[in-house]
Image (cartoon, rainbow, N blue to C red; front, top):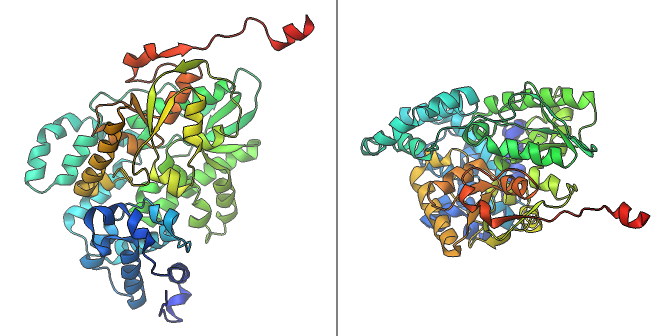
Length: 454
């Protein structure tokens, strides 16, 4: 793609990066076939190619963001399916972030839009605030029809997505180390996260149990918190950088105390962001080197388990699992085969969902700020899952889990919860009725050494 930035414009690092990205695009349009919003809406402006033209025009002219541009950028899910498809390697992920930062700084959003975005950014990344907010969910569900009638669909969407049962307490609370009782084979840091530890703390518990039983010491570092994904994706770059720096500081201290084999992340949206810390903080000399090291050590839990031996399963199951590949995992991190391979090794029957490359509509807070499109994508995904008639649905991201559960009667759990169950952990919450379909694997009474000795 030919660009027309001035020499003065290219002195700005973000503009220079945008120009490098734009020049890789060859207008082929292959991305349109795998873009969820284009598939739904059929509007070129809601395709990656259309957005790339709009971003180029906005940045070249140095104009303030206008609704005819920001509307279509806001509709982008940041699923990055287009990047998996693109034959030219266009770095759309960073280009759309540059555009969102520009829109946030120059755009004139409505009062309602600004209020909703700032409210979400002030609540969700902070677990204690989020817990208090969820206490209002029962009232919000009763008022949801009224919210929709008066044009407050975002509040209705928040209420609908909130868990209907009370939020449970986590077993492993706060910073500390869960040390293995066996031979130590690795030492890792785990990101406790923000929304996930409130909505489904069982995921962190299952991760710690599974790793600790498999010989891995699991550290939750003091001072670490939200990864910054939520604020980064809505153009609040300064807040995202603050979150990233806090985590880099906390994890760097832990690395200085002793070797850390990996930084484990069990929310794939967070994993995509942490793996990008090296890029996000590249311009800060105080953080660039440490951030790059953090990014190099970041691994999704299934990515780590696929290369680390945690022994043989303790239970075998006849359950059929429909595996939903979160966009942030399959497109953002290119972690594709590992989750399914681990589930199969653990004894589950794994079913592939049609149109697996298309987003479920969660996309961070997208299902709140763009509820209509998000619901259409959820229902499309739910229809494909229902056609499979599975026993369970598994996913690797808390956003996908909440989104899919709101449209399905089948239980939706995290992949690591099923793995923990198969390797000796308790039945995951919500699957108690299926416990009878999991059978203990007979354990030998004698070891190999006994046979050799005899």
